Image: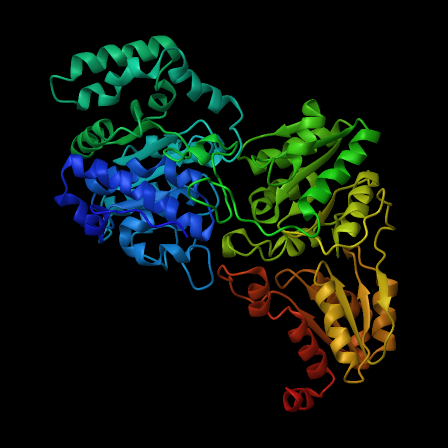
Length: 639
């Protein structure tokens, strides 16, 4: 392990209040030490590196100028909050980031009063900060100023504009800091990004530093003349902050977000003088101050553990391809045969594997920015025109486009194919990124075909099946991480819609699995066989439409039927229960059980640990079989 950096100024800081005793020169040194400490910590834990390095000076300046936690600091998304956590009493736990019983990788209300609002999805900060600001206006105790820090990528989402429009209308004191690094996880796309780029592309940034002294009307002399000239030049060059000013915000900037000599006076002046909403436009660099992150294509967005000196990540060798790569290759195969196949993602081309598609078919791949609602309806429009769109969105982010799935896709029976990555529990990102609800919220939509792959080979077949489905919407889900190493098919086969597969025949109890828990079911079946119990095992493949014939046969030929899925209550098992109820099966005494994710949000840990907590591992499946058969006592004695 590399020696940890020496941090004499940081060692004096336990809480943000300690920054008030530091000189500006010491604050600058503190930022340097905070950057080194962040790099050192993430090298041991892995996690989001580049975003935090880009806001080190901003973090120090905000905590030095404002009075947190009375003043509410809301970080958009929260990947960039590691330096903030170090300064707010959590330095002694920073090397537990994203680990079981450790610190969350995002802001979290239950973790610290310095995290007034939890976030892990983007573009919520201005809305939340406006809520705090209006609560202050209404006399809420312990609530001072509200500061939202939002990235330029997150500003591409409609929710940010809804909040700014409302804030401008209300006209109350609110601070929005636009952390503009010209780059979200992927290079930001769209008109908003181009607008921000034009603000400072017309001349070298160094020539505009006078503008960094802030809104002219707020500044003391002698800065006003130089600032006014610079601001006028900016407006002549590129419209300046007029968009934000039209929305009712005073606009300051752009300023160099890594220059404490600019940040501190601008924030101090703004805090002293602001009466209404104000937007401070800070230019930063993701990965700033750490060459391996600055040089990486994603600026070190998310990393495994790494060597501080070289930046080389420590990753275990892979035995099987990831589900994401399997999906990407299968989709490429379909696209090579059909020029109507197009792909849509919402700012996650790498995460969804569509970067491979974009390289091969750049004109048929669309990254729409952080805008899941738009992604879904855009896909619906493509489908209505006869194209074959695959809309690849993580389960946790598809939640943000649910109205559009219902209204624009399902009601119109448009053949949009939803590729749902990160299904189930995801490990270090915890509850905010878990894919727990998609089976439930999609299976209740009329005409929606809902599939889940049991392994990576089946995923290839489901891509082919979705491609062939052209009379209505479909979805197929698959988890994060590597496959199980099964033999891969040369090409995908179209599955019969609503048809499951019998894996092994047994007696007394049948286990019907939906998704990748099938491997754990098979482990449980092997263990049960040693006890003389031989369950029937089936792979459902479809949550909608269900394999009615298979399910009724399992119910008729066994005394017990257990369903298992990587999703919340209301999903696959509930669909099966409805079928059995409608068919009058329960009248004949079938013992029916559903194994689903528990009714809690599960904090970060390894995926194996999370599934143990959820009760969905092989040992718990075995125990459920024994309990259902009424031989739990035997189980406990043998244990």
